[in-house]
Image (cartoon, rainbow, N blue to C red; front, side, top):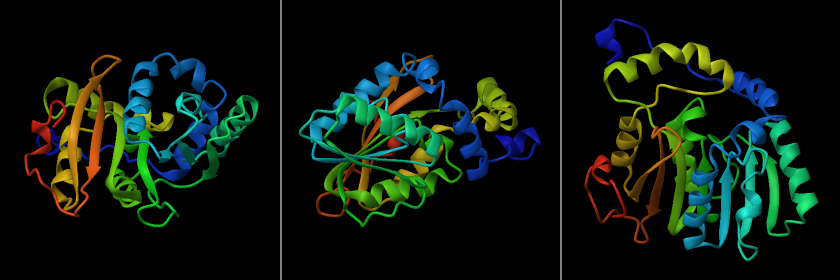
Length: 238
């Protein structure tokens, strides 16, 4: 699409831009996005707790989702932003969230945990905002134990048409806010097709505006996929 428009790719995100952006967002993040993303956040927690166990939340931010997890699950949270994590740490202390094992500053593209360390990985509004989304997806999948699930909430951009053009043109502006507008479903689809042991089991539309989706991936217990359908075919539970 971008080649057809005769334009260059929009400026990509980088870690320096992201750290600065989320340092600015930290004081107001819950106020601005708390209610807006509440339904999706609750859906992601519910999906994670269907599996339960040890849960890694990538991009835990201010820790707004942490009180929603049941006390019998063990939660580890990571985030690139120290400013966001300070708010999360205060939340954990103020609410006595004893099921939160630890919160660490970490890059989603370079997770320091050993392979197969978690039963569930949750990443809410993260994958489309990191510099290399496919690298972050690889790392999230690496964290999973066989049979574990990766739960993502993500903005899904348009693949073509006027909306795609608008998203493309907005990207150089919104990158300063730490966002990526131009992120079509095809990037998830192509990543999924390359995986030998991870498959998509659910794609569910989420508010606001119908531009977001809840995605569930499973790490195949025997190390091989059982279902070779294209990811775009999975409109609901597989």
